Structures are given as structure tokens and as C-alpha cells.
Figure (cartoon, each protein chain N blue to C red):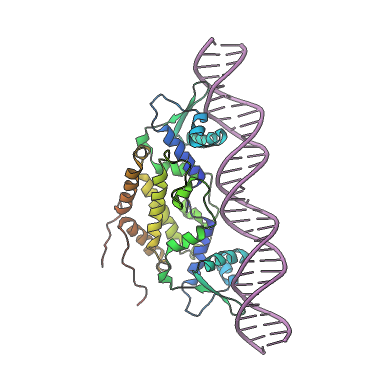
Length: 161
Length: 161
DNA sequence: GCTAATCTTGACTTAAAAGTAAGGATTCAC
DNA sequence: GTGAATCCTTACTTTTAAGTCAAGATTAGC
């Protein structure tokens, strides 16, 4: 259960674009330099993000990348989802995506755990936007804990029997 | 952000051991057969779990594996942690483990997110034991949502009267 | 139109995770 | 004490993710 390199660096690059003005662009070279990536690698990441409609690119001189939407309208859940694709799980992990294909059906006690975890993570990420990440670290961390502690669209629980 | 094969199948094997009687053992061959793994692969997983003190093994004829503790005393957080080790993150992911080594210090807006996510998952897993996983799928799924909505340390459930 | 700067794309290489194989060590049954 | 069943351990192979390379395509400026 870990964040992949692609997820992390893709997110980092978006974070570099987030504070730009509406008509400002960053080139691959700039992005790569700021994040300590090779230009080729940054190019691959931006290509994925571009295909997914998260960033907008302009070619040619004066070209580069910027966010396709406002930073406040891009949620982490979407980013992670996009950066995870292409890395399709081969075995029962696929429960997190395609819910009906499993060799272990009827023998699969952990299925709900995998689904549940995926859902928890997804819910946490759905409540954070790129814009919020630009705040101080402490603030964001706080927010994450809040989300963890609050009931979202879940039926209120009974703490004690 | 996904559950690795090692995490999943290790957990599955433990789940096979959980309902055994105190002096009952399962052999590698049995475990492998029940989970659709090769004997070699199952052996590797059980070796990891054994080293970590989660299962107990007996060699020789009549040998095999059983849980080292009661299923109600083994939390998923420990299992996942054990099965994740050896897969040490090379880059900034290491925030989830070693918090002070990062190339991006001062430039690292996502650090709190990665830490926060790790923590959310960890907390959710800390509140689920192997014993609880033996219940029906629906029940467990429900419980995961509860945990998501609750502050922390939930009163442990009674298994079997 | 020509050139330089830039993104695009598919193929390739490298590194890491997953899985396999094989010989050694321990225990039980007789 | 011998042999068979079983776990233990290390080294190897395969598969998958990560990262690199190089040729192509598009645009701005002249």
C-alpha cells in the first residue's frame, strides 16, 4: 500500500503549475529542473496528465504547460486515478477497479478490506484540491485528519452498543 | 496507491490459518492449493510472516504453520507493515517511513498528503483484526466504514461467546 | 518559407517486484 | 538409525514499473 513514483511526481508537477497566472506556461525543461526529473521523464508524466485533460499544452516556441482548470477545481482523487492507470493490477487487486472478476469468489475474505481501503483513500482525496495543497503543510495535514474523523456520506455510526 | 501482491496473498494465507484449532497446522502444499499459489511462492510468504513472528512453524512430518497469536490479537496494520518491508521506497515516498530524508525539503507541498494518507490507512487497519475478517463480507465492509467515520480506537468486538 | 523552440509519440533500457528452483536442515514414524 | 515429510534459505528467472532516447509534429518569430 504505497504511493507510486508516477503518482508522486505527477502530483508534484501539477503543484508547480498551480500557482501560475492564467496565461503563464512552464516548459518541460523548467518542470524537470524544479522537480529534479529528467526532461524525458517529465515529458511522459505531462503527456499522461494532458491526455487526461488535467493540463493544457501549447507546442512551439513560447509553448509549455498549464492547468486545464482552476487549481481549486482539481481534486486529488482524479489526479491519483489518472496517474495510476496503465498500471493495471493483474490479480485480485482488480477488486479496486473491476468488481466482478475474481478467481477467489466465495473464498475471498479480504475482498471487502481491499474495497474498503480503496474507498477510504478515495474519499480522503476527493476532499482535497490542488489549491488547498498550496497552503502550509500543517494546514493540509490538519484537513486530512479532519476528513478522517468526520462522517462523510456514511450513515452515522453507533459508538456503543 | 495500491495493495501489492505480496500484501494481498500474505493476508490471504493468514486468513486460511485463522480458523484453525490451537494445535492444528496447515502445510505449505495445503496453503498453496487453497490460494492458487505455487508452493515456492507460498513458502516465501510464510517465511516472511514467520520471521516477523506472525505465524509459528513446525518442521518435519506433521509439520506446518499456524498463527503465532490469537486471530483476535493480530491487526491488519501489523500484517501490511511486515509484508511491505523489503519493498523500500527509493525517492520521496520515504516520507512514509523515514521522515527526515527528502531532496525536496522546502519545496515539498505533497509531503503532508503522503504522510496523511499513510496515517489514514494505518489507522483504519489498526482497528481490524484477523478474527473480524472471518465474519461475513458485508459485516467487515460495514466496519471499515465505521472506522472511517469514528475518531479512533474502537471497542474491540467479541468473537464467539 | 525558414529556423529554433517546444511538445508528442513509440521504441528501447534499466531497475524493482514477483515468482521459481534447488539443496539443506529438522522432525516424526517405524 | 533410516527414510520420508516438511520447513528454511539462498540464488536465479520472469514480469512489470520506471525511466531514457530519438525521430516526428507544431508553433512563433523572423
